[in-house]
Length: 72
Image (cartoon, rainbow, N blue to C red):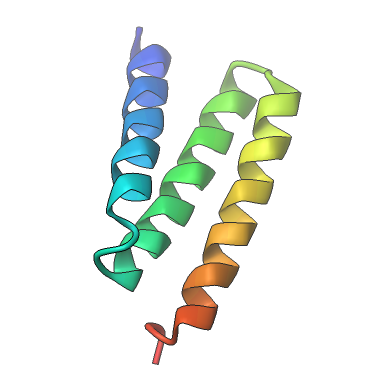
């Protein structure tokens, strides 16, 4: 039950922050963090392909945040 709630919150945060990305660069960073959270959930449920893809999404989002100049 706790793991499922964690997964639901992680994926919901991903959707929310993805929708808000155009408003501020910090939402891109929050999206990257929520992707990492979803990857952690995938590891907990042993869904390795999902964990792999979410890790890539996190890296791409972090790179977009870094390039946005918000990390200065």
